[in-house]
Length: 311
Image 1 (cartoon, rainbow, N blue to C red):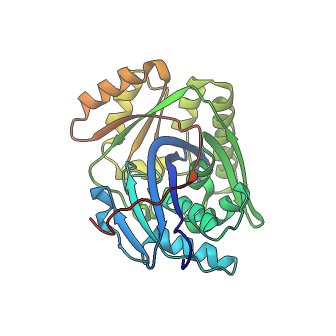
Image 2: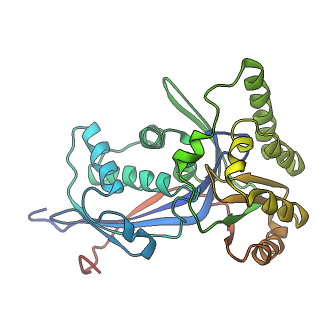
């Protein structure tokens, strides 16, 4: 950095809900909760949390976002300049709302800017997918809107659909559910006939989303055969939330990602009413009315700020 002004960027990445019932590891929806990273070139790596929930993470280069930056840069034979990262987030951690996927996307965006890699969206998706293991959450965070994706031996394919006229009321328990525990209850194999049946349900779910047949969306969410029948046993509140949501206007209910958050899908005009009813019914949980984030991640160059290196 000798002889030049340090560069500074602001990165904003939306959270997401994934699976949406029968779209296991394939469907994602970007939501208007955000991870924000302000990065300023410096002499060393420091991560300064601006949200108290983020204080549990390392404050040096062992931080996950920094690891992503360095790994992406190394892929292209580059060494990124160290930065001080000021990180804030209103995405609940370890609750199935894409907090780790948002961190991956932030790291990919910063590596791209720091090392002038000029990555396409498609390449960013492939890189992010390597860290996350499936493209639904990272795809939604990168592109925004509703995403339909698949991964295969040659890479990742993704279609994005903006402007679905729906909101998502999320019922978020205080206790986390480890993704590893949630993965461990899933069957290791499905028979050919079970796979065909599960895939057909997922196909109809996507078609129903695209045609605005919300009643059919709800039916297909309930008929998922991939993961919800196994995971709902870990969540004693699932049935109760589903009952209240069905009664007060939700057209569909699904686990958000691996849980424990339950996502209740509702047409926009009914979302405030549903939010109030769920809040009253589950006072011990965090109930949030979220809308779809129509835009994905963004990064902007900004004037460096004079700020303390730690708080």
